[in-house]
Image (tube, rainbow, N blue to C red; front, side, top):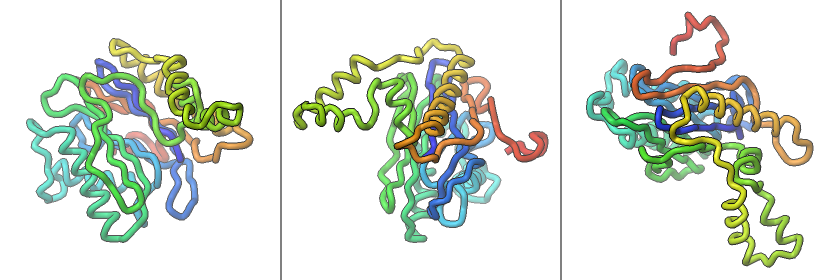
Amino acid sequence: MTVIVSVKINDGIVMASDSASTFQSGQTYLHADKIVNLVKGLPIGVMVTGNGGIGAESIATLLKDLRARLDGSDPHPWKLDRPNYTMQHVAERVREFLFEEKTVPADLETWMRLRICGYSAGRPLPEIWEVLIRGKECDSPKLVQAEQGFGVNWDGEYEALDRLILGVGSGFQDAAVSLGLPQEQAPEITAKVMRQLYEDLAVPAMPIQDAIDLARFLVETTAGFVRFSIRKQPKTVGGPVEIAAITKHEGFRWVQRRHFYSATLNPA
């Protein structure tokens, strides 16, 4: 399942993930690349949860193939107009490439959620878009956080952070009904409990370093919860934590990254 976390503040977006990735064969590996700078030199990043690839290609390789189109190193008409591109347009290219070009022709069942984070050209604040591939279906890209939206988002393995931030886990409604709450009242009561217990962990004015620390904490908390859970949690979160920050003036920058060879040989 894996976990991805974003923390969006005034100064930018922090992206963090574990390194576990499960492929369509059912095999889980702990050294996958799940955060990618989608266009070198531009403040755009992508992180992914779900299947670790499409067919025989890993998601990291696929996203770098798309990067070659968008940055112009591949002779393809998708090269971004750097002074004028929008994050929505970038998200649409992600969907078109991964779903229409890779998933549909191969007649594959792909389950993948991609969060596309960054700044549209010339804009003062970042956005987060989502492309969700569900089997053989994929809707148009969805705006998750507009420029004026702030806060923490997480996906993949929900349970630990649902309990920590929302105050209730996935089994709350069933537990409440088993203790006598009428079934028809369970959704309303759950929503009220979440409003009462919700824990704000970020504010728009948070410094970027604190947002980095928060994102790291949330990924590590999820990994620890999954590791030590005895009964319910499949062991599909783990491996090194990777973190990147996207800011208006510095663009996409790695904060914490796993390398299997020297960083001087691994600029991608």
